[in-house]
Image: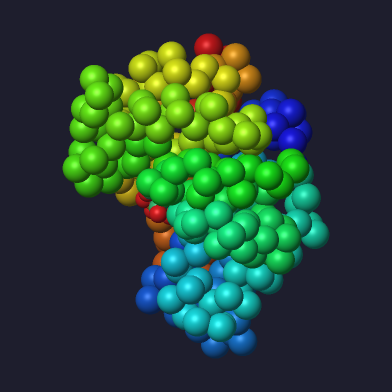
Length: 271
Ligand SMILES: O=C(O)c1cc(=O)[nH]c(=O)n1[C@@H]1O[C@H](COP(=O)(O)O)[C@@H](O)[C@H]1O
């Protein structure tokens, strides 16, 4: 998917919501456990109920890898279902990969070719030759961890090295990489006060912003400093939407939670 198709979808749906499909069997409504593939049954119901309210889905692969072969099959069915039923929706494999070049190429093939995701999250720690193999794929996006939502972000990412914070060097340096137009960045919603500085370095890039809802980030604050001329934000909520109810009405309640966020976004898009 191209960035302009993503922007078009944001305008049509008046939403820049990304729903995180972080499926934990221990949190599923009990009646689904009788299904042959409870994880896919859960995702299908959530997708059917929310696809008109969001522009992206982000399964975090950890929640599938944890169940071995069964989990991978559920992930594959989920991405195929989204691509078949709602090809306009941007898909993110939240896998946080990155390795020496030839290994990164295989990770990229796994998520861009084998599973046909539009994007994958990648850690910048191993540098240029670990990220460029992902960037080589046309119309696919590499979402680089810049400033993460967790407390541990302060261990390294905000440390000053050679007179600037490490996360700023990640942003600056990544702009020089081949096919850097295929980059997006992760910035946590819990770090709203950093968005103005980040926008000075990457004014035009899309940011994937996790951390609202369960982690306590503030949507208004993020938009105030993070929104750009083409919106430039994908705001993710996982647990706050998909586990809002753990009974038979879970998909209906997820849609209500997604609509609450979409309506806030619609107002923010007008301001
Ligand atoms: O890359 C991510 O998506 C990510 C980066 C980050 O800094 N913080 C963060 O929470 N995430 C992911 O975003 C999702 C957040 O989930 P909730 O806190 O349940 O909304 C999880 O899948 C996290 O792994």
